[in-house]
Length: 442
Image: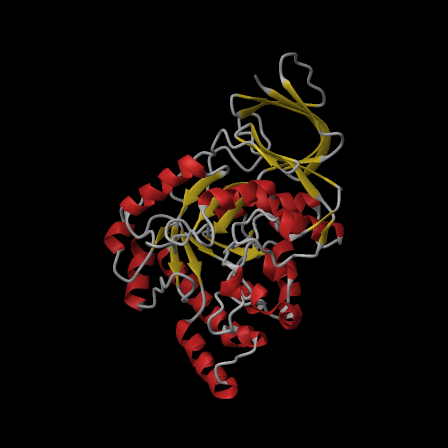
């Protein structure tokens, strides 16, 4: 039996219109101003907004090996509650996803336990080039290179290795760009000044704008040299924007970029009150950087909005600066926070949908997702104007906390469909069907 969504305010491909959606056999079979068919389940949207499901191109769900923080089931559950229907998960687990056997194991976990559609990046190290060259980029979103150390210790800092990968890899390369030597020098300076009790407001000074720009520039220059398909993750500084073009359509770009929710929301003034809870790599930086990122997002220097969801336990985050890990949970609240920014006039709903749904699908060449189109998979989200407060009692992350605790959200996700299956409805989950492995048209 199919599903009809009626009376929705549909936002898709730059347009807003009222209409109905017919879902049959996992896909959108009809879009019309009015659809009347008997023997189908009815969802009355009652004027709520209907958008294509969010595609998050950067999450860390911690499985295998770090499941005291999170796992694929718990975090995909939180993701669908937040309107994310597809995600791309990173390789810095334990063990790190550096071989094809380990990639197959993660895909198996995804098939068995992920409520959202899933895919997994393959990891690069200083010595696994033979494995990298065997990657099937029709089922793998890309190769992840940590050009600065982060959680998981997968630093690739050998220039000859980087040169080799960029010259030989025929798939998309996604990079975490921070220059390691610059960071190490800055830590040494901070220890001399503060000892072991470094204030959290030193984080953007230690993981500095210079570290970000130097590494991003290296990645871009290597990509230009070899015509490599490069995607630079979580841009955090105004200087980096000039490395990316807004004069080329996204379909034709060989070098693309991403900005994250936290870099669009917080600034260095927030370290005083939030400290470890907003410690991310790259660091949240100045108000000026944040405003430049917004401008770069809206003028298409930045292509995608993502979460970089990276949970740690409360006890881990409560440690002093040098021991408190970087990263925080975001998938449940990334779309609602962006909808708050929309209500505040920072972004139009059409642009939000473009950057969170359409653009990831285009950037990664995802098959039949990211748009509300007949014949496409029915990955859909309904949201309304109901307000809710973020509290520990309504957080679905396994780690049990959020940097947005106490915030009153202006919009509420009411329904999330994955492959036509209503997996989330007003706080309740349908866990009978799992999501699907994403495929890429390459």
